[in-house]
Length: 75
Image 1 (cartoon, rainbow, N blue to C red):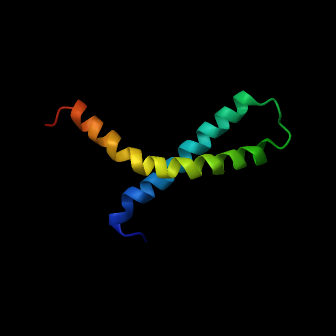
Image 2 (cartoon, rainbow, N blue to C red):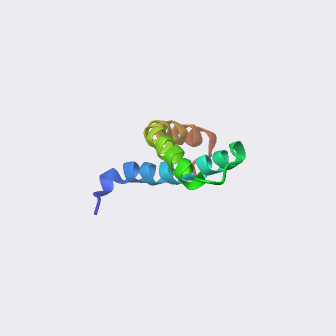
């Protein structure tokens, strides 16, 4: 098991993986007419996207959290 202090990294890892999988798949469907080999091309695009998305999520999440805290009422 992963220690709780690394939860934000594990969260970012899974979130960026799922988001980049979905977004790259939608983008590939919209951008190509090719169905032969689609899965292989999609997986290549996804892995590239994930390699960018994971560090971006780790960097951007704290900023987004602060922005949300400023916009919401704390009770």
